[in-house]
Length: 336
Ligand SMILES: Nc1ncnc2c1ncn2[C@@H]1O[C@H](COP(=O)(O)OP(=O)(O)OP(=O)(O)O)[C@@H](O)[C@H]1O
Image (cartoon, rainbow, N blue to C red; front, side):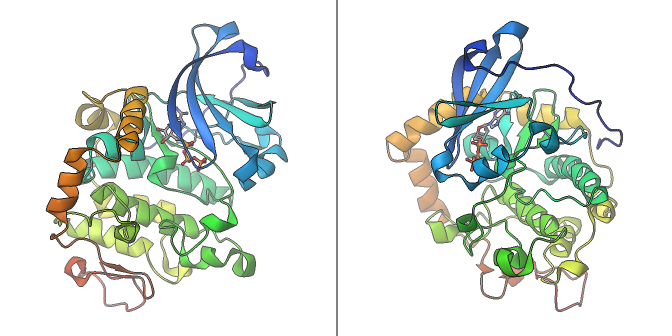
């Protein structure tokens, strides 16, 4: 269930030197960062995650360094707040709570290559909507909602991570999750409803295991799947070209897609049970990369090449009419 109440602010003071942390394992890496599982020694056995960010490539780092960590914190149970940050040599270390199941993207790439079932998607997205409603009330935006930035803990709790400023190169036509109006950041600025667009694209990625348009990046097209009318209508409403016509997070959470939505235990049973740990999954993904892709992945590419999947027209932002919903006759909506 999504949470309504705000969490009390973190009061523990985390040490601001690298010697106080024992690195246990790598759990992931991003464009300009490596994420470690570590123990905070003075608070033994407190397990934390440390994101070590390389300033060289990251506009985000410069933005982050210009703000005290307390300003980056949000009091909401579905938002992952950094615990502290400090520099080590030339890198910024951001210490965060350890989310033992890692990101949705990492879960999908290891165990759910064709995406999650709709009931699982509903639980996850309802939690995210709770965070977005909170941000709406504060007239704040996340700006970069995507499955890589949604983390899950062993009890099924879902948190939005990485309140980051995407680099200008991220705001390009190939950045799947970025809303059309946000692509022109310098001219139009960001608007609150850009998060709702990214939320819609995230919903599609959770349903297919990859974002729409990703076949342009030489990924196999998604498998054809049948979706409920409620799911298609919910996603279509997020993908209005006109941001003012997209629903607010609050309105979306009352959408029929979220009716009878399960609780966090549903995620534990249907997603987390039997899932390899985030560190095991990361090791496996490195081996696969090193070997140039495993044979089952290559087989999967062969098998799915002939199956029609999302055909997302980048120019007109239209999705293959095979997914068209009958619920609206409003032409300005993206067709599913
Ligand atoms: N707090 C955390 N707890 C557990 N695992 C985490 C945590 N933060 C990140 N990870 C894991 O590390 C992976 C990489 O995270 P990272 O934040 O570096 O990705 P990214 O957002 O793509 O990076 P970047 O911000 O550099 O673009 C995630 O997919 C997730 O599995």
